Amino acid sequence: MNKLRQWQREAVQKAISWLTQTKVDRHFLINAAPGSGKTICACTIADILLRNNEVDRVIVIAPRVQVVNQWAEDFRGVTGRHMTKVTGSVGDLETVSKDICSTWSALQGLQAEIQLVCRENRVLVICDEHHHAAVEAAWGESADSAMQDARYVLVLTGTPIRSDGNEAVWLAYDDRGAIKHPEEGTYTLTYGQAVDLGYCRPATFHRHEGRFSVELDHEVIKVDGDAGPELPDSLKRVPGLQKSLNFYRLAKTPQYEKDLITPSLDGYQASMLTSAIEKLDCLRNQMPAAGGLVIAPNIEMAEFMAKLIEILDGEKPVVVHSDMTDPGQKISAFRNSDRRWLVSVAMVSEGVDIQRLRVLVYLPNALTELAFRQAVGRVIRTYGYEDTSRAYIVIPALNIFDNFARRIEEEMPQSARTEEQTRQKVCPDCGEQHELSTRVCRCGYEFPLPKAKLKPCHTCGALNASSAKSCDQCGASFESLFKISLDEALRNGAWARGIELDEEEVQEAEKNAFYVKDLALKSGDAKIIRLISVLPEESWSRLKAILDSSNHARI
Image (cartoon, rainbow, N blue to C red; front, side, top):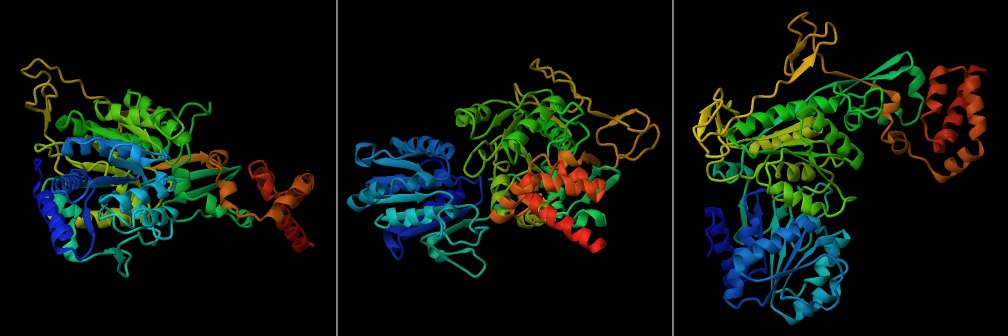
């Protein structure tokens, strides 16, 4: 047996006993914290079942292509067997190697082939990130249909509660939506236990606050955290505005300088990244290869954040998203380098193992606890037995993120909840510890000079430390107030998504476009005239009805 952690040895023994001796149920569940080592544990269980002639073939279903590649690599390392990676329909699976690894999405096109393999062979199925196999979803139906004749099923999860409330196939659930499987057929390792045992790193959450000031002609609309915008009476009647101008939408909106090309260094995102860069610098004193991850909501925002990082940190980050060629290769290259930053759109989540990641800037589209925990799982993996670093997660100051973070913090042992200040740094060449003031290591390595991170005072122009709360020269407060124009606020199409329209309204708008413009001008309301330029034309029929109603009320 390979060298395993204590929990892995216990899980392997319990799984083999449950599946081959107790035989009450063909499913065994491993519910272990992200980053604790579920893949190696599962490969070891498969190796024992193969060597003991309990199974002939192994089929692994994983969430995405990058994870499929990691499974194939780890499976060969543990068992010595080749595993064919299948991410689309390949016809007769009997012609490929005995062991197969597929994505959950590709499974829908392989139902008949996998069903035949499971009927004609003794198969161990390993379901990675089992929450993808929701009973009501197509993936769950595919899994249940294709693998109902498998001899054994090994279920792996680190987030056993689905945020959408749907239950995954094969296992029972309790009233809270959590997996309920016989204790004898389950091995559980919580995040708190993993931290206590040194398998995962403790996490610190930085709740990044800020207030937006949205400028509309002579009106200024303040948007702060979970509180909705305080709209003047003349704007409350405009459909969708209350929903569109909320704090999190604005936090995900790129803010540029007047040239509309250069990212603003006074914006909310720049403030988030400045905090994250400072923390990464500190972490790299103790862990020279430490890296940072930005989870962006879309490609435009990812490219914007990448430009900001290059300006603020002086190094161009690696960007990965689905529209580029072979993002998996870029992720692998980043994993094996000492590059500082990786910016991702839905490419670095569950199962993607980059052990050196330690800082996370979190700006996703999905506001679920499942997605949140999966993201945190990317930065809590240990880098080795001597790794004493912490994970650092920068999140917008929203109640929903606060609640997610609080529950994770409550799982950590008390001793891990307090962050200690780093007072030493490690030489990346020889590993020797030094005081922070040391310039040259005995091995000859010269430590780079700390980067001077300064920000100007908007009142007097004096330069101050980026962490300063007020100006050292004039005392002006550095309040976290971020100005944004209405055009910028609506840049990401929030209007179109914020207004629910039916087909009749859309057709009516097309017929009355010129009339709506004329009616808006006759209203004499400068704000309505201004909004006409940014509202989608599809919504003009509803605006016409509002203006008509307003005119009748005046009469």
